[in-house]
Image (tube, rainbow, N blue to C red; front, side, top):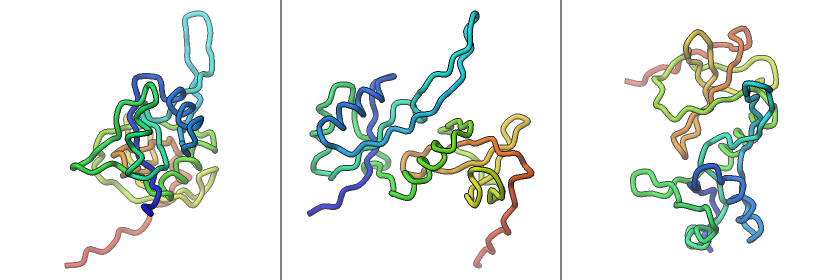
Length: 172
């Protein structure tokens, strides 16, 4: 029997939560990373919950059941890269869950980032995580790449909490 994998589903705009709920009601294991964001209106501020990755829901299923998953209202398609269905490793799902559970401010960015210094977080809720440090504007960000969907999680980590890892030697 084919093994279950995390597949990346694309949903209609702002319907990630409804799609995730409908899939769960039908018995699928679903992960929808949700973050809180402080929104400013002219008369008030309010914390709102939103999907970390706009338009994406992760569904753990078998390849031969993808069509069934697409039958829920709001589901658009499964994401493909180079003709293959995009899948996520369990470890990548766990990394996203860990980051979201800490409550740190996180942004997502789908642009390609030029490789920078490899870093390790040495303090705070993300201690021991490794990734890449980039500068965006005048802030330092810690990047965790999520290769299954070509997305990056950008987390503002103070420079003093980042330790530069030695560069890997090039084999010639």
